[in-house]
Length: 214
Length: 181
Image (cartoon, rainbow over the protein chains, first blue to last red):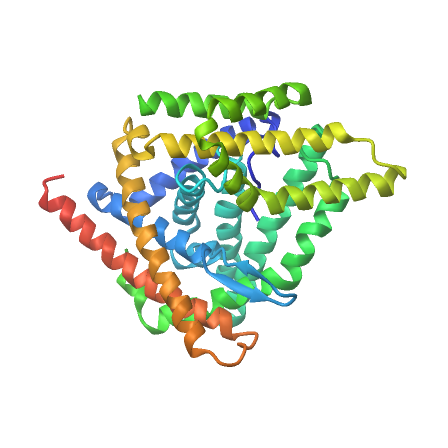
């Protein structure tokens, strides 16, 4: 779902860097709090959680129509830990994809990080907190579903804005890109992510893996 | 030296991302292909594989959109522009990754080097394990899985990876402590 290099102009990427910088700093602070300010523990925790976030994004699941979609899992990390922990890990995943594997981008990093790594886990986390007290299983499904759908919505909005700034970067207007991105997410990717979040979180709880903590 | 290359690479990406003149982009793209001729074949292969499907769909959608909008397609400048920019930036990234050691390049920040090396080492192990899981699933599945089968399988695999990464992080923290970090 994330935007490849070359489709976002500096008019958007530079403000996105400016917006995400304080968010990264704040998230790192929250990360330190998560590991009780133990810096020696913090580095392996970030490294391991990033590797985990990366590998679950490599899991491909067949969807109707003969194609497949990959899981994002950011809502799961947002629910299991917290959205700020997820944001740091997902940003590092995007950085590794771009700088080590050659599958992403530096100029589009903050836009992708905010959309996939921050908004997704935050929405998932909030939905789960809000609905979890009524029905945990339904809340997990809805959290996973809304997390990915809202991320997709943000990506389509960014691309729509980019088209308004200059069509030489992104030639399709919002009314074209919005259904093109949202329909597959609403019909296929969202339910898939919802089911994945529900099953994985339930299994993590049942096997007491969440209690083990990083 | 690697750090200097990293900064040059990042600045180049931002400069290229600001270019909207197709002629300049063509000249830069050809220059990059000639300048890094040793990497050109490999880079073009990766370009086709990683970026090809996306830019193809984007190009097709652009042509269809303008055909429906105006009845004819004459916006070659737009088509050329985003294809060249995306191609040039991806080509530079592939060349950079081939020629520069990323871990050496981020040496200016010790925590970043540590995190990157810890993550990437685990990622390579996990990817190999994941391919084993796929092989196992394939060899043991006769019928096509139902709608919930695949997410359930993905969940089981994820639980395994989370357990593994929790154990790894604890081991690495202990290893760092034992080395007096």
